[in-house]
Length: 116
Image (cartoon, rainbow, N blue to C red; front, top):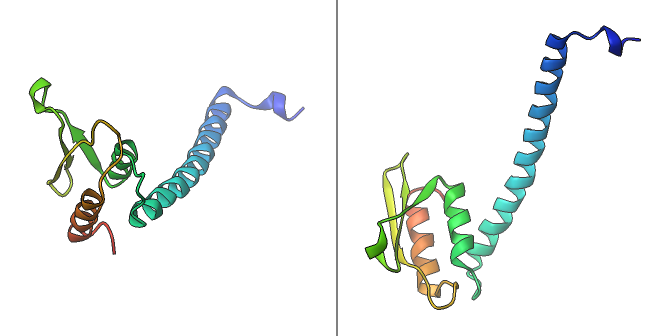
């Protein structure tokens, strides 16, 4: 049988190939989810959550900065590549962002060239 003649080295190469194919498929799935989230963000829905914002900003290369116990509801997102910081207050008691926050975030992303 042809399958029996495969060496461990060629199997390792095959496994890598399949892993790469899986990653490519995963990126396509993730990209469509990111596109949907971006489209939703730009429509400025009344129920856009802080968790969705965190996911969206992560897609643009931002990471949430933790200031410690005393930061309260203040939040900052840092993009190391552009050295840009986005600051805002976390919504509470609900997890939904206000319209002015969505407009501010859109302006910040447009000014940094992330949105056309």
